[in-house]
Length: 292
Image 1 (cartoon, one colour):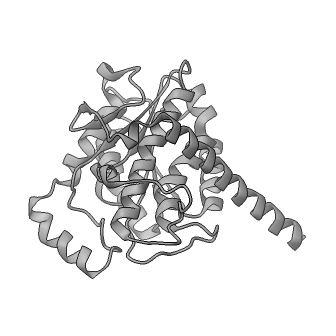
Image 2 (tube, rainbow, N blue to C red; image 1 turned 180 degrees about the vertical axis):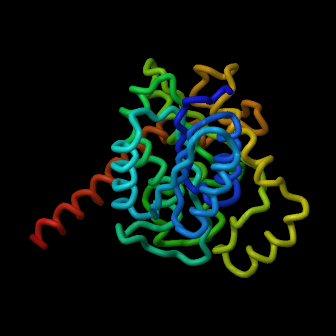
């Protein structure tokens, strides 16, 4: 099997695209690490993925919108797995009302972008040591409606749920492009993809109108398996070995929006992300010091 002996980490793997991805990778022989927030759904996913292939399946629980949880998860993964061959950053959501995380960050930005950034950075050395390795970031065609406001990345002045989501998906592609640039020569590739409109639990937190629209449109949407197909292909296909910094839809390389191709914006987002995760780490250290 093409992924036999390969360790694949999939976030947001308890339902929808994430679960279908984990099952697809297991079907190719991979040892799959499921990352989920909810224990009940996580355990159900563990059973499903275990039955999907001959490899092992393990479960780790974490709320990836909280940076201390991302750091704890990364430490667990590094302690448990000597190699990581594939990292699929998939966990995300769309939320009706602006909510702040314990780190003081807007929830959509924290979960959909900063979790990708921080987890990847914390696992980067292990991925490089496991090369050839692959990173796949699940983005969306919605990125085409995104426009980052550098003075309001946390959407404090104006919060419109779908456009905040679109901004986070734009951030996914900018992050992927800058990550690919920084990984040149390491044997680790990074690519982003659009899974399509998928019939899943997505949109449940987007408000009544979003829920109604989403449910009404489910008949015309892709199945989770269809949405996950490109992710599984990016994780396993020999023909794209070495391809990095690209954006894919339905197994085809596509050109993302003009804003998503802005190299200066990609570099600036990286700096802003570094600043935000460093600030969170400093705040935690200060709190622990005060308690002691």
